[in-house]
Length: 92
Image (cartoon, rainbow, N blue to C red):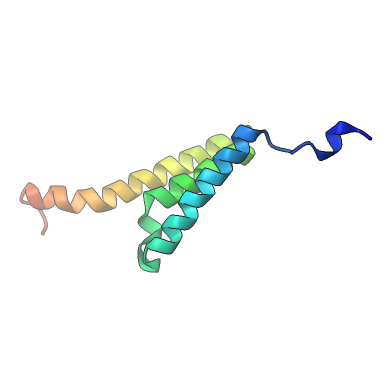
């Protein structure tokens, strides 16, 4: 019998990372209100971590990375821009 038959498809480190990222993602999904999920950066980064482990070397990875960074910038701007304008005497 070939000993490689039961060999896991992912190395131990990758499986550990998948488990950690998945646990973080599920925990956040269960603890946050549904209306706030779109702006939860931990959920976004957990999903990106899972994607990176599974398909980090794919040809789409750079585009996905730019999309994630852009969305993170949008989340930050949506939260901070109104506060900055209010502090600087701009629009309330």
